Image (cartoon, rainbow, N blue to C red; front, side):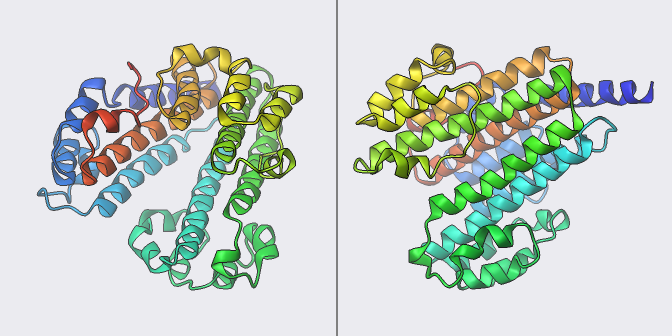
Length: 350
């Protein structure tokens, strides 16, 4: 009885948070803001982000600090849902933290690669320090890749990154490093789902994660076809996450052997995922593919009876909302026209 109550409470709480999400009108009004500060005040005074933006008192607000406050709100929302006693509670929290750790490691490595390692300190999410064993302040002091390895000593990430020990920043293959880290994340997620769930609940969770992985692989193929037209199929394949679920082997092979990104995308359109594209808006490839996952999450949020699937759907929807807000803030910062910024957004009613 208690377990059933907790299951129902989780779904109810996630759906209540879902009900507070920004509307199309909110996004239109954000797009009309003339400065980052004006957008910050709008979020504080007109949306549910208000309590987390109490320190925003004027239009003079630093973009980096605003983004940290918004990310903190999202992370604490996820964490608050993990307090419910339901199957998979612990592993969902583990996956959320693990994903956050990987994002911080990759951010630090990219800044090192760009020669901007000192910038990490200004983007460091201080709220996340309470959830990770990685010493983020030490990560902010790293000047070489070996410094990063030293900070990660004793963590699961050390053996994943140790093959790059001694390399200069310009010698690092960022795509391969990203693939190794996310391979670890998804292996861990799939193992935990297999261990803690069964039946329809297990199928819903696996379908979600496999969809995310496979569409990420498609995006990698398209990017390589656009940027590195001479890259061989085997070279591109080595940078993909090694999972198959919906996309058939022959379909993946056809995309890898396509001569151009347009040809590869045409192959994708004939897959089961590709058949759903008519339900999404046009625009950039990344947004087009991400919209497929977003709309699947909306469907799950509204109709699923499995609390862990509802929780996962909520995190996908919330992450999309946060990405939309940050894209708007960045667009305003660089004085892009609202219509150009809108092309980067994945909106529920678009």
